Length: 299
Image (cartoon, rainbow, N blue to C red; front, side, top):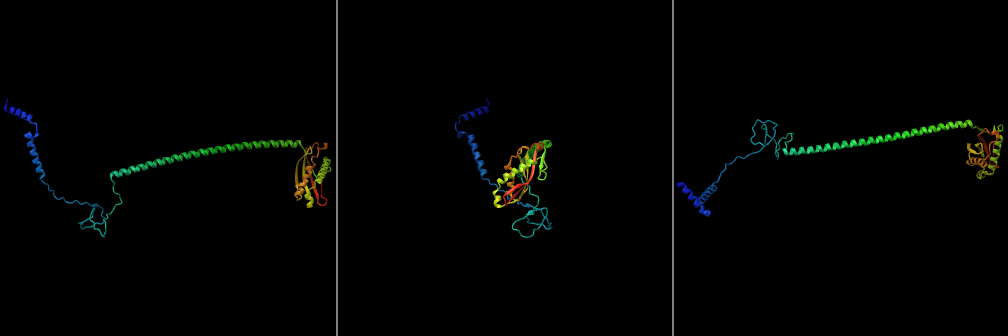
């Protein structure tokens, strides 16, 4: 075995026998060197040179060109300009162009603008939908109203046609009745020479009898006098169809007394055989009231 190998094995054998770190000579040597180096570094001081102070100035726009050089300036511009006057604070000439905002601010503003645009679009859409809905409702209401108007107009036309038909039937029946029936009107002048003279005389007597029997007390007390002209319409059975006042006496008491005398005297009996062709008899007479005697007569 060579000498170097024997030294190596001897070193290994020696290292294996050490049980504490302070027994290792290599470790102690390395520790001493490290302490010396750190002490040298700690005792060394660095001296930095004086750096030139950095000055910052705002940028502005010079309007008036000045040939003289400006030493102490407040702003930086494209050429020299001397200012006049006194100000407590520095004021730079401004530009109407707004300053550029940071990218983050621009992004936020764009986002807000997009949100506002989206809200506006939603509002516009809702407004269009509302207007469309209202338009549909209005059109529906207009159609419904028109439908009701058409139905009402159709009903009115149907009723008008029905009324016209009824009127036509009534006119036709009235003509047929007029052809079959004969209406006779008797006045005081023609009654003497007429076939109904006897019937008319009985009518007069009966009316005067009941009228004077029930002569109105108010006419007696007020001593009323006057003439009332009436038309009395009788049917073929002697019944009263109508009593018409042709001329008033000027007193409602006498007018009503004349009508009452006709009502009390009815019925007047069937028409005579000579009057068989007459279906309706119209008698026109004058009732004269005398205030002195409190009687009346029919002429």
